[in-house]
Amino acid sequence: QVQLVESGGGLVQAGGSLRLSCAASGRTFSSYFMGWFRQAPGKERDWVAAISRSAGSIYYADSVEGRFTNTRDNVKNTVDLQMNSLKPEDKAVYYCAAQLQGSGPHSVDRRSFPYWGQGTQVTVSS
Image 1 (cartoon, rainbow, N blue to C red):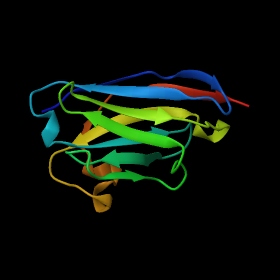
Image 2: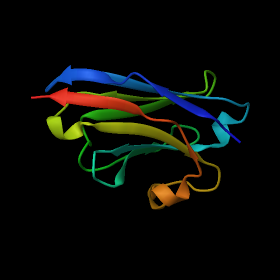
Image 3: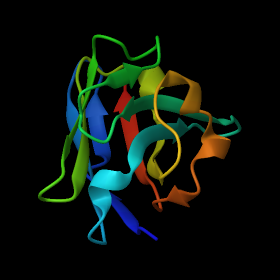
Image 4: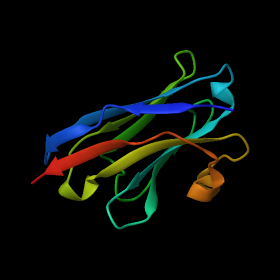
């Protein structure tokens, strides 16, 4: 089982940048397909990005494609989300998540991820 802790959220002006990080416990981090999700008030938790175990494949939601970059470090047991050109609609609580079984774009449904961090708040002012 893996435990996840996000950090790096905060308040930023529109057009600015933030870098989120998710630290994972355990020795088998490289076995997990990792995802980022976000949840705005009153809305469902939506998928944002996902990265394969080797970081060879990375997937993005259309809403963040070209602005967000998902990376991972299997030595440091971290997965990061670099967010550039932030918009007010990016405001949400951001979660990282992990799963052992799936991989690829067909595995990014939130129900496929059994392990979740506690979330970090991102606020973008206009």
